Length: 88
Image 1 (cartoon, rainbow, N blue to C red):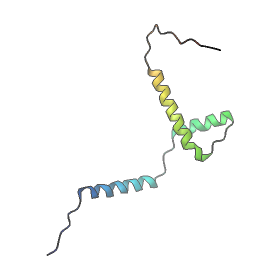
Image 2: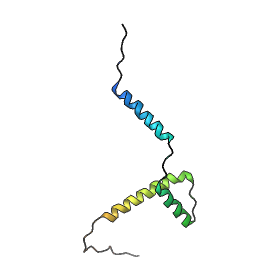
Image 3: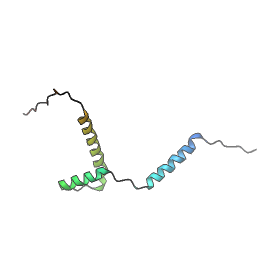
Image 4: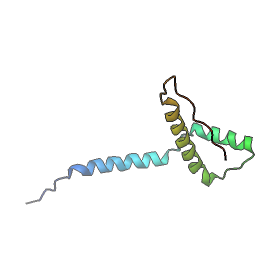
């Protein structure tokens, strides 16, 4: 009498996910539009950015833009006054 192995339910999903991951890894990543902004800013400031630093610069710029968007969307009443400037 032969014993039948039952396939585990998660096994097929793992294989499919592994195939998708492998396929995604083989495709070249689409260029990020921020790369053009970074390159233009570096040229205008006379800076050179090493390729190894580009992901960190891109992540920092994305975070800065996201925080700026949040600050810009914050609703203020019309009677709000700007904060005073303190100088020492």
